[in-house]
Amino acid sequence: MRSSVKLVCGVLVLVALATPLRSTAGQFGADHTANARAFIEDNARAKRSLALIQMGCTLKGVSSTVTQRGGAFTLNTTYSWTGLDNGNDYTVIHYDFDSNGRLTDARVGATSAVIFTPFSVANRVLEVLGEGIRNQLQNAEQSVRDFANTLIRQANGRGIHVLLLRMEQPR
Image 1: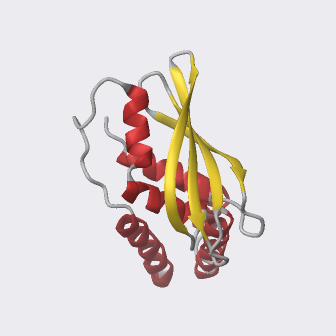
Image 2: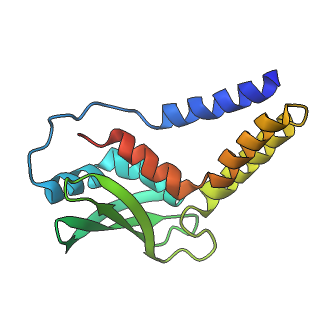
Image 3: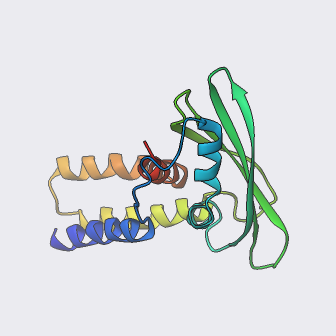
């Protein structure tokens, strides 16, 4: 049981180290679409985002267009990247924002990725970590194993990506 706690703590530490939370409160004005675009297209943030979206690839650039939906809007963000083939690849992520400019969801759009589709490597890493946690919990109480299984089943790269962005987003 002690080693499973170490494993879970290790994963949490890795996520915390990979996502520096810096206060950006008060940094933006009232133009929600411009604020969202500046937030998503920030170069350091775009690199971290691509690390989950197309793990192992190198960001070449990021750009967005806006689709208005009443007071809400969607940022259609294109990440240009290169992988092992040193090609000119791209992945589009549709970031949904509410009328207050708060991120609510992210959906995968078009991509040139064929073998490693968006979030597929991150999802596989989460599967491996989940199996490791399950193995460590073999002798734990059933309620603990059930709780861990619920968390493991729900974990996915896209969800973690949205969570990390929401944690960083200025209020």
